[in-house]
Length: 135
Image 1 (cartoon, rainbow, N blue to C red):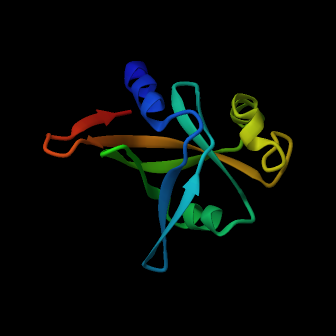
Image 2: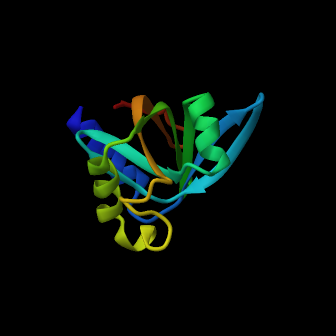
């Protein structure tokens, strides 16, 4: 499983945006995300508790993530689980100092981190069968 997480982190990229899809009242919502990290063999993302995306995740934690890479693209399907521990927030903020500056802080009660649970990534290349990575 650790090798799969390492591979997924390589594909997600370190500074590139990916898009997170949630659902609210039967309608899809998609928004860019750019901050993630690995902590305790899980992949984490961050948002703010006052945002609609937080409320949508709490109401329905099943999400999809997508990103294109040249002519290839990937999709991740997962359940997001909130981790209220300060250690998780600290790891995410410390791994993404520049991206978090002015937006997220480990000691901010409005900062929320989630890890991806039961996740599956489909890495798609046109004309080829998808590569499936479970993590």
